[in-house]
Length: 419
Image (tube, rainbow, N blue to C red; front, side, top):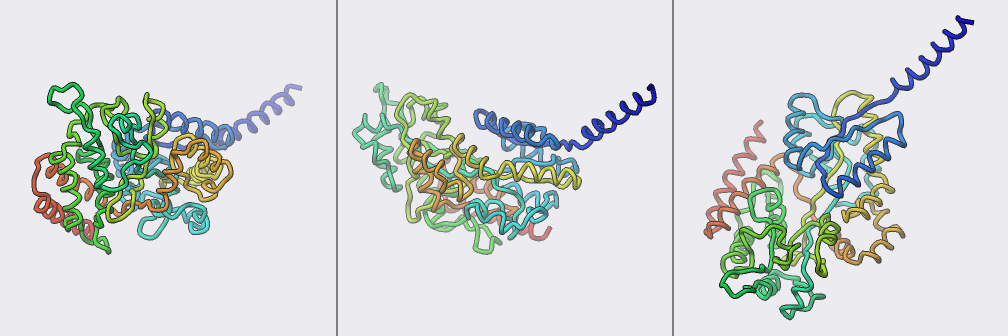
């Protein structure tokens, strides 16, 4: 009897012990915060519940730039996470180190990505190969205060559509309310300080003016031509000639009614809508020679660790980017659907009827453009950002400043090419 009992216990130990041992735990880093983080964490928890053999341990690794630096340090130290949410311009830096597992390791990329929009495919393609899987996509839009439009006699259903109209509207909306000689309400706002946010805006203005960041072969910087000078001068004029753009805007100025028009991201619409006490307008950003809006977004990257963890990571990435979850994520956050099947689905079309402002976002989708996926993009953005800030805040001639910036950028590109 005792021997039978011990045998039974041994069998139970073997069964349950092997069950526990078969669980693969993977580490997942992300940089989401606020409402989007909560939705994201709920999705991770749902995956864990549906996949008892794989458990994902999600870690908030800091803000966007902090996460990027931690990832690069982890890659350099050969201790990367198994999976990470990465911004569009990070993969080229990581591909060059051999840290990422290409999508082709798991599936035929061309076949797998055929349901994804072209612009989302562009965001994950580096040197002609797909390395990550698209997760979220946004483009730039113009948020505006319809109540302020009414106060100054502007039609709240007719937002500006050109640079010229933007100036005209912003002049009408910039006001000294209390008569003390100082501006209380500003016409327009966008990020102007030298960081990735400001360059996301500047590059879109540059494209609208007909300019480019790079030469066609990406071997040289090109942001010193007439289109680039015109773009920088337009920013300077908004701030110093027309005086409709504040270089030290009030905190949450748009939300509190002190800024009438705000360049923003589609991903911020839902949050802004819940915060403001006025009627919110959503419009395509005003164009110039070209009609184009820049695209931002993130993708899911799998890092080289060991085969078992890489396979588990792929299971997670594939699940997170599925049609069902892309639909859920898009409707909950305001990000653009990545999958064409989601965009065309009855459920999403019904969502657009309930949330008509998202139709503006979808209409812009057809002329959205991804930023260049090059190893040098991040530093070129930094160099251009410093130059644009110098010209804007110093009221300086942008021509010589941009020419010097291009020289610096070309030296950097050459150094990378010779590395």
